[in-house]
Amino acid sequence: MTRALVVDDDSLVRRLLTSILTSQGIDVVGEAADGDEVIDAVNARHPDVVLMDLHMARVGGLAAIAELQRRPNPPAVIALTSFGNDDTVLAALRAGAKGFLAKDADPHHIADAVERVAAGEGALDPASAGAAIRHLAHAFDDQRQVRAHDALAALTDREREVAALVPSGLSNAEIGAQTYCSESTVKAHLSRAMAKLGIASRTQLAVLVDRAGNPTDTIGA
Image 1 (cartoon, rainbow, N blue to C red):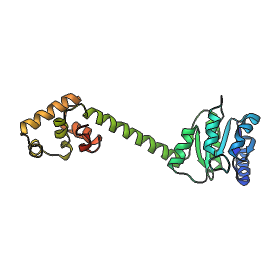
Image 2: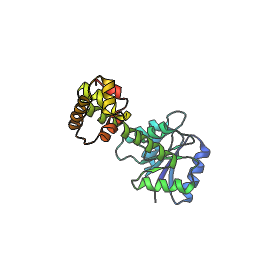
Image 3: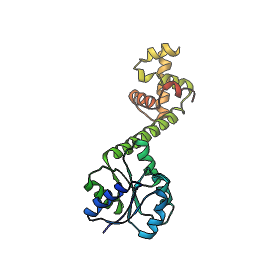
Image 4: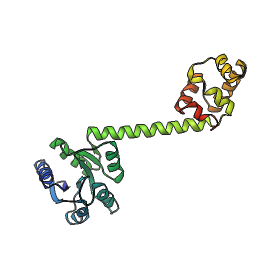
């Protein structure tokens, strides 16, 4: 039977969570009323999972989670909150939580999350999962932008100046008019740029320049 510790500074919430978990076949081995009681409770009760309120009077849940992670073989932690945003979700996960749930989640969902993190899995409610996905997507976009910017840095200033105008859909002649060079010179600059970048088409060059951000920021990098 999975052993759980409930940590919340509201006694009504503790009783409710204990009742929910017990009814779902989970052994609630103890409760704690604030973050500064967590370590002693874990040492005394040896839970598999700690359900941790994030907003408590003396020591908040984030600090208590981080303190647990500094100990050998810590129990898995599910962060609980009545309200949260993307920053709260990410802060809890960075601190070491394996799950994040709203306190008003469905009882079966709460119990299932406890069993899943006890088994070494993660457990996020839909809103929290969305926050994690948005963070990962943003981080991926940032990495792609950095890689594109670094690639364009290998070009000469003139090659970057010409390449920066490709996403606008201008012809070589129009690019030449804006950069004060001949159409054949524009073509030569673009050919050398694509060769350096290892790309074969004008479309690929346009995508790379666009991914790097504001083309004028890349010029002279």
